Image (cartoon, rainbow, N blue to C red):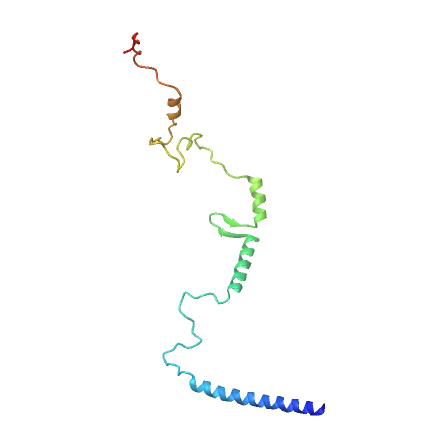
Length: 157
């Protein structure tokens, strides 16, 4: 059993030394085969010209989301001269329920009700804006005859 352990240690040491020597030889061969760097080549630390790709998109997204969360959950001015501010969403909903939405008071009740929707066929007729569509009323009631019909003759033609 001792001979086995001694042999195992000697073989492991020989393998270790031979691997170390082989790596040294391969490093020297690799160093000889490296191409020479051109003096015109850009230094390694210099950034490429704009636009650049994101190197850490997950970190950029984390920073962006933190800024958005801060804006959505705090108060601040967008335009203080005109009185435009931002506030937390829940508070804005409460204010909207309290105050309601503004309504247009002077709107014409007939505005936009008689014009065909875009995409609908107008049947070759034009309906001026603001005028009611009379085509269905005309088609429902026939016009009175302008001259009485001639009396039919007995016996055919």
